[in-house]
Image (cartoon, rainbow, N blue to C red; front, side, top):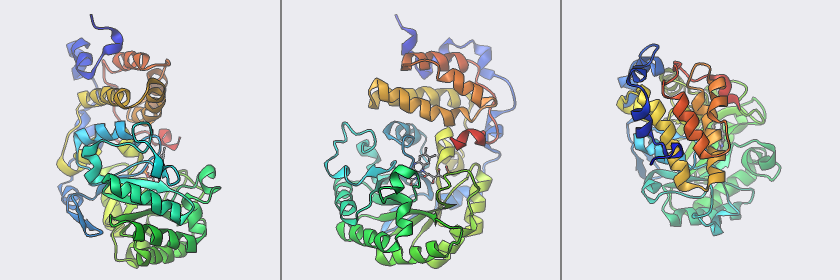
Length: 376
Ligand SMILES: Cc1cc2nc3c(=O)[nH]c(=O)nc-3n(C[C@H](O)[C@H](O)[C@H](O)COP(=O)(O)O)c2cc1C
């Protein structure tokens, strides 16, 4: 006999009273993100050349440590529409000898490799080159150098955004990685440590000359993580300064934000972070007109649990689930309270029971996720 802990998405649908599936509130498809923007879709699905390789789409998943892991990516892939997917940052010192079967971050499914970019963080150009060689040998689409992360433990070791304070080392790093691999080399960077965009613009030119094939630009000033608004105009300044593709990133929370970023900055594509965690179907929605239904919200929750349990041991699966759910719950009115109810308990069986109880009637969805819940 089926135990409650073995619930899947299909079981959840079956065991809910029929009337609850039609739910309440306005039509989700409309409430969730307005009308399909065909012009935006055409723009986002235009192929893009990066480092001599063609990418089929200009809407990317941003690198997110603890969120953009193999399990989340499996769910994302089930919807499709994402041009390139970036892993969370992986340590350049660990990657050369890392065992993907045991690593929580340096792991992948073979079928995702053609569109998967591995992000590396490190302080030393030679460490980074060695890690990039491993990334190339595993068959990733490309390698991304993290020059954006400004959290203290990373910066103190000379990694992430610390490189923006040391342009010579940043250039040497790109040069070393360029010489080490023939796959596309990306750099994810931010404005820097002062609001003046000029140093970033100059560095962008130098990184291009050192061999970077594309830049992903997040126009925030370190050490601000995400509390102040990004200065989107800085993306345009970087774009004007280089010939390689520039991908814009930061605070894109609906289709209008995405269209505005493309329009105002001239950037070649957009990289989505937190919104993609809340709505893994967002790439399919904006590029192909996928319409999320009430069941989509419920099924995705169970799909995330299934994927986490398939790829991780129980302790890690629950930890990663609770982190994802903070963003997922932001989709719903009173998401904060819902979040508290969804994460009650210590194991995935409890999470399934919580989800079953809460999503028998899919809660009301907001037009945009509750952005206050995105600050954590
Ligand atoms: C939980 C979390 C983890 C992140 N980890 C990384 C990372 O590993 N590497 C990186 O370059 N950026 C990282 N970022 C920053 C995102 O890639 C992105 O630049 C930022 O969230 C802004 O984009 P958004 O407004 O679309 O979320 C992280 C962001 C979040 C919220």
